[in-house]
Image (cartoon, rainbow, N blue to C red; front, side):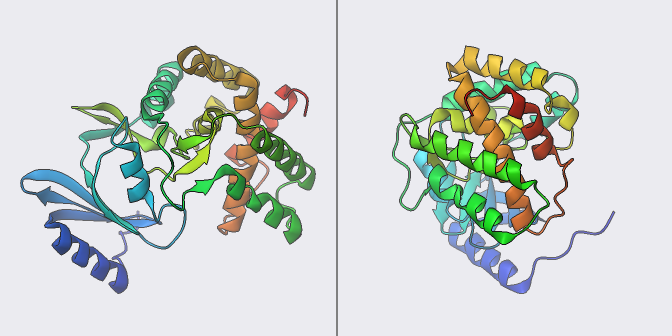
Length: 287
């Protein structure tokens, strides 16, 4: 396994500035593709400082977390654009492990519970993205000439997505990436969501990310039977419109693959989001 690379100088300098500003004594740091994370204490309280590497859909996550007000979500103790001070969850066990261990129904019930707890009528923070804005990636992809994602599939998904956008009911602030790797167990608070992207949309939109995860085990979710079983649990727990949730999940799966292509990944027909899209496509009604 390769050794973790040290953060670049500018990122490290930003972290030092935030640690001083928030009075945090760091114990360790971890770098990911999109962020630099420091674990430490402030006034004896375990905390986390997260720096987003570059402007993008997580740049204002601190403001999004503040808008949720700690309901089912990790609490933000301070934030500025591109950086946030968070409570530290312990033991921070990933929900993905439960699904991978063969307890997918239980994991889905937990996801439904978390979605129910984070649901809020509070207005999105200023500048929050909308699901309509996220649809622009369909247009960019179809205009690009790229053929890694079958163009008929991309066009179909764009049409479904647009129809859903035009008929949304009661858009609200959503997490935007609520799935098995963004739900952690805390000894005090139970299962808790982290890392919201923040997007304004209807409730059924929120289920799309959960239905295409855990991503490294597509055999757990990329079949009609798995999709329908999971949707039945969400309907029983949340009262969602299953037809709309299914259609959103199809369109978002294709959109996820498009985002992968935009980010420079080698997208192939057997990528997990596209396997899910293929499983859902025959189930769609009236599209």
